Image (tube, rainbow, N blue to C red):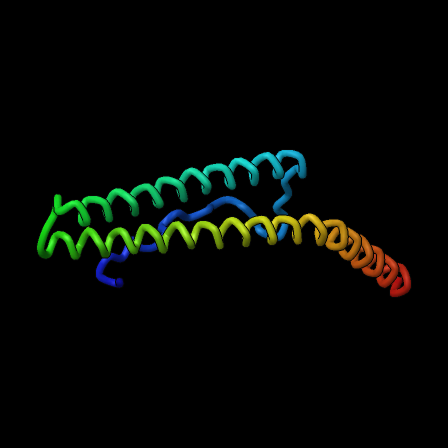
Length: 124
């Protein structure tokens, strides 16, 4: 199916320091929920495209080489819909993991800062 490649993502994120990125938990939950809803809409659209392309082939609206192309596009749309489902699960899992790990990271940073200060005080 490489013949029907959809390309790769080209969006670059600039101006965000990944080491010090912070987002309010309440706002983040709303954002993640909105992303999940949009992914549901995309999945439904891709499944509808899959259905319509297969119907065009099965009702002999297209024939020959075009029919093969339509079938290939339908399979690609279906595989992309399945990929969206995996993406949704991954996004939810990673978001929940980040929510659990963030307080631990804050504590680790505070402990490291205190250790640095104690080290500076003992060296003086």
